[in-house]
Length: 105
Image (tube, rainbow, N blue to C red; front, side):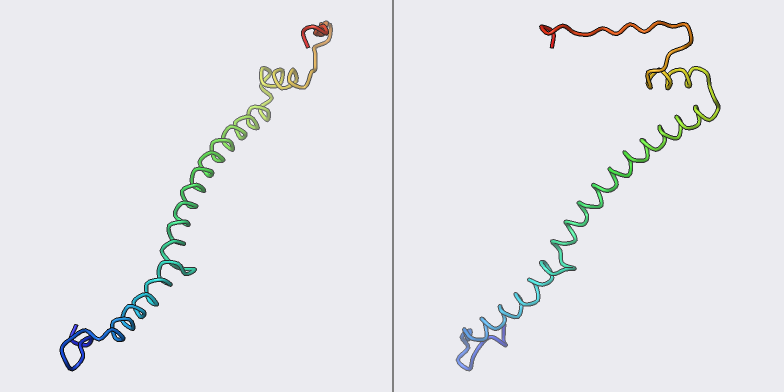
């Protein structure tokens, strides 16, 4: 505080304003610049979100890989289930299609 005082011992207002200006000039870029505190906090949120997406995608990939393995082994139950999803039927089977009436639509 000795630097802020004039010859009479009182705080010199110009020196005080300059000191505050220097502090603001240092602190503001630290908080708001491209490598500032606000950017860091935003990026941490982005990282958390991406980690959640990775976990979901990893789970989906595992399920898809399980399906691929089941199809590659030519498991009869799996093949039939997938064929049914595609609307295929076995020889000799009859397909009955239920069509809703106008009132049911």
